[in-house]
Image (cartoon, rainbow, N blue to C red):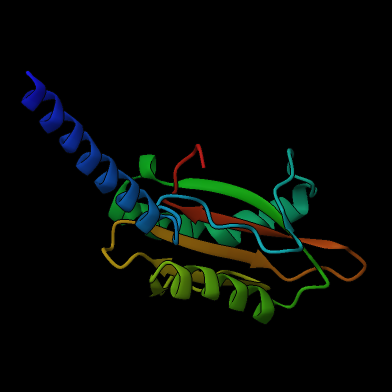
Length: 160
């Protein structure tokens, strides 16, 4: 019996090393299905903070992007998150921050999406294995407003 205990202890020790090593190697980047970390100036309000006119413009902008993503994946895999972005942050700075996180941090690549309608912009990303996607669709801020709508559409987990 002592041999069995020693073997079991060694096996457990080896397994613990594998588990700890696996966990440590995965700590450097978040799982591909996790939401990105919202940069400074981007917030997720509890309710949609814009009126009906802006909501219609917003839906016109992100609707075709959602449809494009859904055509390849099916609606059930896609999550839509409505955000606000400070009018003080330029689109270029915001896109650069997401590029750092998604391309440099996760190894994703840029993905084309249909140009949104009106005064809007889109920036899309696809995971290296092609299973996960993220598109950001934003409206240009209106004069005199402090924030603008930003919509994140993707295959991320609803729990992240």
